[in-house]
Length: 356
Image 1 (tube, rainbow, N blue to C red):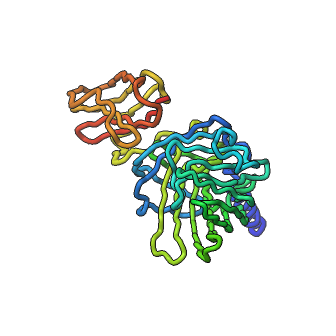
Image 2: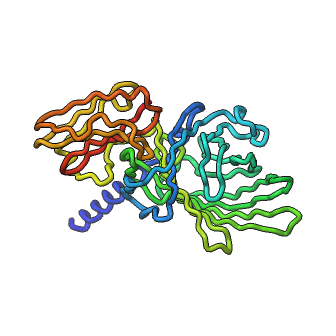
Image 3: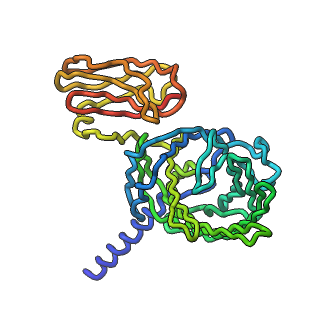
């Protein structure tokens, strides 16, 4: 009887583990649609940021500094200047400024998708250098879940200032973690972390010069968006002691999140104050509500994603115990992510606010 009981426990453990692993699965349903926009935040110095552990995890990146924000938009390839170089691409991504991937400043990326996977057909940078891949890069196969892997080769050729360059490479992809991730704007559940190891060789035709590049990247995906909501990239050229590090994170209306983060926030104080903003997202007016358990000198500030003060409706005002309410006009603010801060004598409480 005891033997049978142990077998039953093992079977239950096996099926529970299997179900957990299958919780986060990426598929073609997450491929972005034409016209879909995202806010992409970049960190100027990511050298101190690490990717954390693999497996089941709760990754916490609440304290990431945001040094710039730009809009990235999915468009049709024919609406780019480079459509002729990507005849098989179905979707293009344009960055308002640029996004560095290793040492490459990306302006456009070109993709195609099918029920079986997601392919990258190449890119164009801010200098107008176009890199089409005649053998595209397989980013993942669908469905893609924890411990799934992809191995692929890719190849392309391009011209820089009249010089032809050939690129040949390999990519090894593994879904090495799952769980939740906390970003400055909130916590996203049901994410899959994907580790990619890319090695490629660039041959400068007619010169005998060859460059060898190694890239290791960690990207966190949500099933509703086949674009990383968090991305850490490490690039090193062969023979170099310097590693280029890029860190970015993304907010999209497609990806649900809950408010959770606050830099330097006392969690007990946050529970007492019960700061709320409504509606959120907002377009014109926002009602800010909070509770005071004792009299305090209060300041209310609103910061943009770069940490710049944009509104300061209350400064050092004496307030009494009880419920407090404040109406904010945000119709003059540009669309994006903001942070509402209530500063008290004993600390501060912060909530993210999305303005559309």
